[in-house]
Image 1 (cartoon, rainbow, N blue to C red):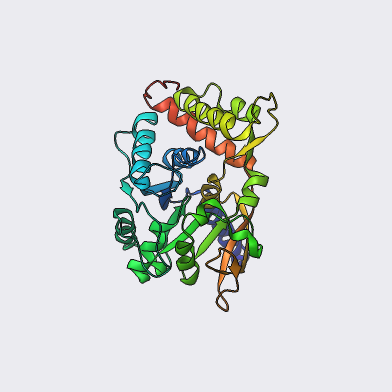
Image 2 (image 1 turned 135 degrees about the vertical axis):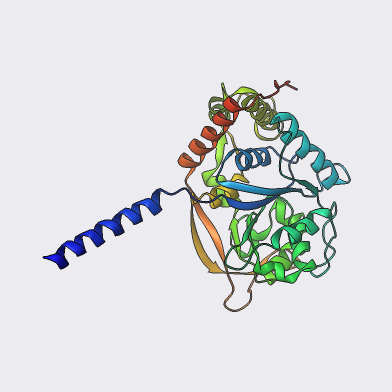
Length: 326
């Protein structure tokens, strides 16, 4: 009888501890973001998500280069980044904003020095292979790859989550972010750093947003909602909607937020053989046994619910400057 009672007490205690563990809030995930914000209209969504959701512990944001931006492009991106964080979000206290290299790597073994690459190496030093710093790369991977080349042991302290490549077919390697510095991706894929990738194909399938949908989602969401809508609308008219047409059926993709969705656990992934990248930007066979994680699906219902709940809470608890339409 006594043994049975003890067994019941033990089982009840175990169940309570298990429930308590499930209900305990998870510690924020330490992240560094590398972004070419200003080049498109999706980076802003990632920046907002990271800085408004308590699940993220943002250690710094790095400005990445892109050939479509004014020279020196990473310096220009840094200015756009500062405007978004300090003026549109109204943050006087925020994570460090660091300037990256404004030109791509010249080959796969020579880093492009920058304040961003050095910052990444320094920030990683408190991490390990069992407690990695997450690096979200949503532009050219120049600074991330350069940091790996400056300090090869960095591969033991970080993991990379990136939006890049069109799909996983041999010819699917070509994509805007990757083509802005193929040597950077050659260096990353050759290293043993863990990589998770969200391809353009998956983004287009799961993260496409129509004109009316964007308008509805962003309506009545204060100055930040008005800013996002203005950015989306201007991009839509100049890049998406056919000219001299009333056809609003085309969608635009909020590509880069796939990286944040991965960190929040809102994706389905597969672990597959890790390729190498040729100089002609095609996938080729990689090192034997090497793998990477590929995102195959995004839970957009939960993602947008979470994103807008964070935005609404931020708007309600901060004295935001009014948005001045363009």
